Structure formats: structure tokens, C-alpha cells
Amino acid sequence: MAEASEYLSEFRPRLQQPNAEALCNPAPCLTADETNDKVLEIFTRLRDLSSLPVVEGNRPIGLINRNIFLSQMSQPFRQELYGKKSCIAFMDKEPLVVDADLGLEALTFKAVAHGEKALADGFIITREGEFVGVGSGLQLMQVVADLQASRNRQIMHSIEYASVIQQSTLRSSREALARACPEAALVWEPRDVVGGDFYQFSVQPEGWLGTVADCTGHGVPGAFMTLIASTSLNQAIEQHGPRDPARLLGSVNRSIKQMLGQMDGKDGTPGSDDGMDAACFWFEPAAGRLVFAGARLALFVLRPGAEEVDTTEGQRKGVGYVDSEFDFAWANQELTVPPGSLVFVTTDGLIDQIGGPRALAFGKRRLRELLLTQRDQPAAQVNEAVSQALRDWQAQNHRRDDLTFFCFRA
Image (cartoon, rainbow, N blue to C red; front, side):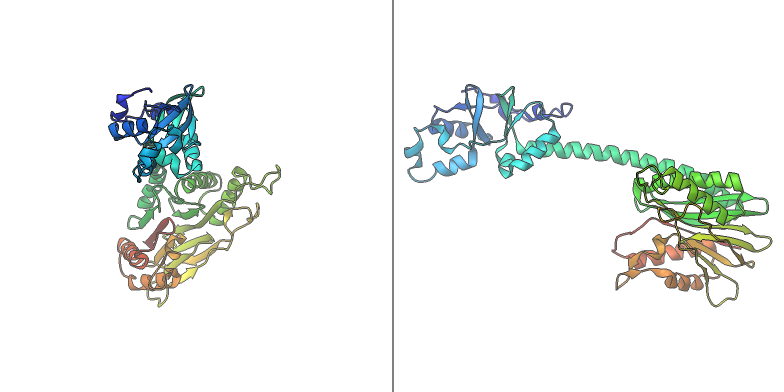
């Protein structure tokens, strides 16, 4: 029998070795000709020993579980009947046996597939088929949990830095909006650390362009789409100028479809079905002229003295996406916006949010009613009222989507 007093020392897994050897503990073992009395003596002396391997010529043939063995031997006359007999009487003849070089991920799958006894009894570790030690199921679970927590921390650090990058790409647009309309107010709240909504503002001497867009997905996939879509929009503005929103949406549509391989599968493989919904407008303050083009998003205008909020709906065709034709042409809609008018634009993260006593969407009607109550308030106050109403409506419900909206007075 090989003794190992260090078995009882504190276990410190070697995480730099992500394999079964990192979990290997030296342990006493028995041969088949040793008795159950010997097993009882070892378990009595080594109270932290959960299982005892049995070997034949230094090759493992079984594992004796402490609890099962003691339960059997505690029954009347069992020690008298079995004490002098071979220890294989209470041995598990099919324990989990793994090589020391087996990776932790593969070891975890094997342990789960082997059933509960692999976690309760532990497992035997070998090298070239010969016994080298035992591993604990609890230790395996702890190491896997620690590794997963470490990976999660690394992923979160990466995502948090991605958020810094995403916000940096939006900073120039916020600065442009501040120059174009200092009293405008904007809310941008990703559902996760990063998100699939973005905004774009650019200023010209006679007016300014505003765009709010909702790209496919949330989190990291959505953030990747915002980079693709915002880059395409920047290129479209440089090429065509900011005064024709419909033309800009068409240009972004073609760019996304080309970049994501949505060209009718001409290479034999389908492209991704991704894209964006957008509200895009050009506004000339001096003339009170607003030109709007929408892709599944609307624009809301409350004019001075009006009893209702006018809703200008976008077209029911997304930008990009497989079912959007490559040469689809969005249409411009021209609006007259008198001085003092309130203009509001939002992605569907606001409109579609579920809440209220019957778990319904927030909806456009509720938004219009809210804007009417805020008709004389500054843009920042309007946004705060909308945000509070959304929080009250959402209550304990899960946030469904990224959230972006802004408003300004003409």
C-alpha cells in the first residue's frame, strides 16, 4: 500500500496547467488481496479521504467510496462476515479513469457523462495507464467555476472597453448636435454595456442632419452592426451631402448588403439577414423646413397651438436585410415646422417596451399623450418626463431593447 500523508494538505489547483494533472492528489491505494479491515483502518485514520483506489500491478481496477463502504460495514455482522475478505467486495468496478494530460473541459464532460458518482466519488488519474493519484469532483467543480469566472471577467473587461470605443465614435455627433441645436436633448441607453442603437448628426451653415438608428441585435453583435452602419452613413454623407435623407438611406442599404453578402446569394452562400431601422431628417431652421425619410421608424411633431401630435411614419422597409431590394428607393417627406414646434424621434426600444398592468407595449399613442402634457417644457425636461414614464411603465419587466430618443424645438 502506498501511503500519502500530504493527501490531507490544502489543495491548491495549478490553474496554469488546465488538465487533469492540476487536480491530481496523491492518495493511498490498495491491491485486491488486501482486506476490508484494512480499508476500514485507512478510512478511520484518514477522515478526509472520500474514496480509496484499488490497483493491480499499479493499474487501477476500482474505487471504494467511503460513505458506501462505511454504511455497509456498519450493518450487523457485516464486519465479521466481510472484514477478512478482499476489499473488492464493496468496490466500484467501473470508476471514471482519466489520463493526466486530459484537458479540464474534456474532463468535465466525461465527469458529467459518467454520472453523479464521478462527482461524489471522484476519479482516478493515470499516466500511460498507471495510477498516479485521485481527483475530487468538488475540486473539479471549483476549478471550472474559477476558470469560468476568470473568463467572464476578461470578457466583461473587453466589453467595457468596447463601450468606451462605441461612445467615442458617437462623441463627434453629440458635439455636432450641440452646435446645431444647443437646447436639444438626447438619451442613449444600451440595454447591455454596448448596444445596437446609434445616432448621427452633422451640421451645415444652412441646416443640420439628424439620424437615429436601431441595428440588428443587442450587446456586442449589435455594436458591431452600429460600426458597419455608421461608417456606411458617414461615407454616404461625404459622397451625397446631408440634404437628401432618402438618398442616404438608399446608399447605406447598398453598402450594408454588399458588406454582409446579402447580394441574392450570388456566391452560393446566403448572407446575414442584418440591417437597421432608421429615422433620418434634414432640418433648415430659418425656413422651418424639415425633410424626413424613415425606415420603419417615425417622426413626431407637436406644433404650437396644435391639439394633437402629428406622426410621420417611415416606410415599412428596413435598411439592409435580405428582403430589402438592393436598389430600393426610400421617399422623402417634407414637413413645415413653425418656430416653437417640438420634434421627437425614437427607436422602437421606447415604443415596444412591455409594461403596465396588462403587460402591453408602451406604444405611440401613450407617447403622443405624454408629449402633449410636456408641450411647453424644454427638451431636457421632455426627455426626463419620457424616461420617467418609461421606467414607471416597465416596472419589474425586463428591458427589451436598446433605447435612443431625442427631441428639440424648432
